[in-house]
Amino acid sequence: MVRFSIPLVIFIVLAGFLYAGLSLKPREVPSPFINKSAPDFQLQKLDNMNELFSNKELLGKVWLLNVWASWCVACRQEHPLLVNMARNGTVPIYGLNYKDVPTQARRWLEEHGNPYALSIVDYEGKVGIDYGVYGVPETFIIDREGMIRHKVIGPLTRTELRKCVLPVIEVLEKSEPVNVVALSEVRESCSS
Amino acid sequence: MLVLKRPLVLLSLVLLMLVGMQSVLAKQAVPMSEDPEMEAIVNEISEELRCLVCQNQTIADSNAELAVDLKNQVRDMVKAGKTQDDIVDYMVERYGDFVRYRPPVKPSTYMLWVGPFILLIVGITLLMRNLGKRKKNTTDAPLSDEESQKLKSILDANLVVTKVKNEAEGTQS
Image 1: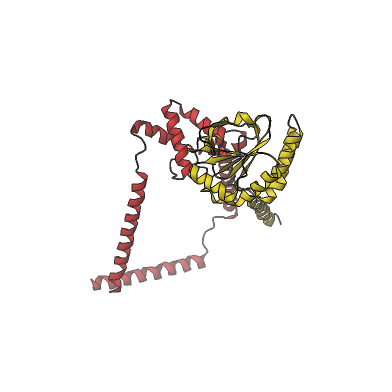
Image 2: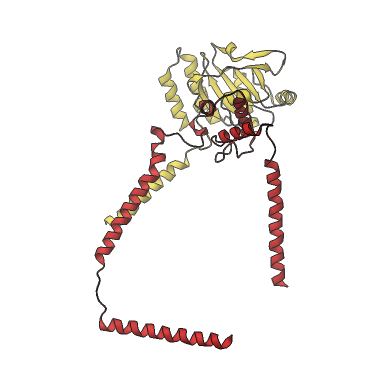
């Protein structure tokens, strides 16, 4: 009896690990920025390249920073959701136009609709590196104090929006100072 | 003809591979900066950093766009006189511990570092125990008459076979 139970136990443990491995997402590198201040930037505005814009101007607001580019195929997938969100006026969405040609970026917005309160030009991708961006699109949720509270890697989906993004925004907008407990509860429930 | 065809096919395959290799080599040999000494430092640091897009490569190995950008960032920082620790810390701050190709030793990674050794020790103990058990189960006993007879006949037969074989080979040559 013991002879058979040992391999069986080993098998069950192994199978358990493998099963857990199925739902892991190795491609998603957890951002070390969660609950830390968003790095400061000062970049040209896409629609008026003579003017600079700094993230400091957004202190006191809950906002989204969406990293996008006209060459990014997955961005097209999430774009209608962003346009819809902008129409509903949930929160202001700011676009970080990542390693893109400004003329092409402007044309892309004309074609697909512009959900952004403002887009800024990160031509060399330096601000992207500062924010730990490693794929486009990525979306950061930033609170009134300029802290990054949540990050979505890859295109937003309807489910993600409903389960994560909107609830996180709600917590951030309703509580001041931020209700950290409620926030981590929401984030935990949506990551599963 | 068939015999001749095969080596030709093989040869052309090898040649094709060589040509392919050369184009790959040519691509990687693009000079990155004028100062080879600094480039060596940049490369050394890049070997420590993981490419976030192609996760099992270092940014030194990878030609992904992000890896190239990160390498440029490393180069800029080396130029500015930053040390390796400064640069790795800068990357960890932005991309997390995952960006380090060599995971740091800390409580959450103890298992990773010690695990293989634990497994090795467990394995050796199990092996020793099994070997000990097996030794106990076997006893040295002298062959019985019948057994030694059998052994002798097998050996003799073998001897004859080799002898015949050797003779046959001798006449052939």
